[in-house]
Image 1 (tube, rainbow, N blue to C red):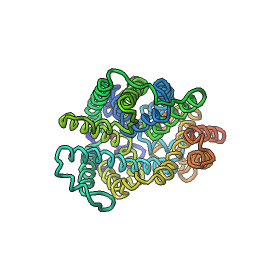
Image 2: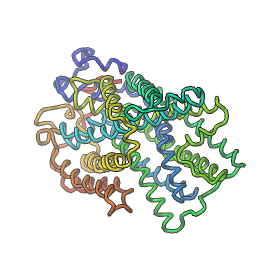
Image 3: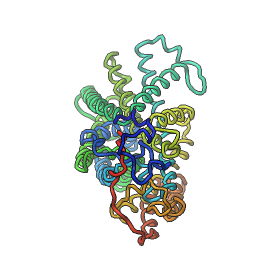
Image 4: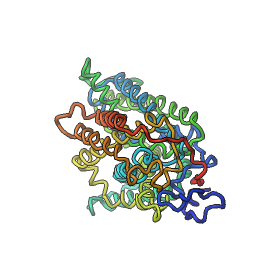
Length: 501
């Protein structure tokens, strides 16, 4: 069944595929939220790898990593930070990915295990809000690259870049809406189209960024600066390495939550492990090498510290090569947006409005929300980015801690998948009126402390570790107060799964 088929209501499902227990009539069950059947599991190791090949090499990640060079870390310090972060992320993402493969369910449904069939809307909503905001911001950043490219190729368009309406010039609106529409068109064809787009974008991205680094290395005479003029050293350097590694994990705090949205379609655990090994430790170290090559070569050339690869792309003297590099950066940003910032709110919206929305309609709603928030105003406001998005981001750690502690420590990976779709008060995940009060009790204080660590000046030195503080607190509190007497069954979802792919 294709993703377009998911628009069909449950009553039109092929004979014999409806759940025998009546959950097809439940608001908890739709085609898009149903467990993925075996024939829908098409993601191999290469598909998992392309997910990371696209996401790791995003413009935002390059800006963050190049910033480490500006802060005084030398080449070896940057490589050490990414090595440490990649090991941590490999472990966290593999644990999260195994959950998706075993159950075949998306994140809003996965959250029902710990938070209850109705309480799960809390983590799904938090993850969705963060994603919608970043969807708009990333689309805006890609539109600025497209605008600069168009002006370089057609100087007469420069007049369209003057003036402002709701914070954007006419050219800004044209480029933003064009990329917004392209992403919406891709998503309208479902997860399999996203998978195909990633398979195309990943090698394009890797080849382009590698070629850019080699070009800069040659321009710098075959050598680079290994640090700025006054690099960090001793304890100060190691503290910066630890903070950089922690912040890199925080950047992926979104993905470690909803990685199951993708691994629910994985063919096997081995495919997840192989894809993660190449996509995380190997790919992240390759990313770090490109970062030090770009930043070190530019510093060697003129003592200037760049802020993004776009700074280098704009210096390419050949118009054709400039166009190719710019289009590759745009394709990369679109891929990142689809993966990190479009899928999560789609599933969250389907979970919130199961009778009104399917994958395609939820994609339209998510895209419209990313438009009406006027994301360029968010991006240009440090207060909004640091406090609103930073505060929401700090909530992801406690959510991860509670969900992981419940699944791995308490349940030992035993899940009663049919009960995830059951409104029966006797169901395993009904708890108290659909909410697990112990999960909420563990989440609220842990979240408050994590947000305080992230935002209050008093904890500035530890702000980079806020995700870890929240995750460890959430897991510890939940493990201490969880109900260990409740019966737990391990039942797969094959009996009620309808092919959602």
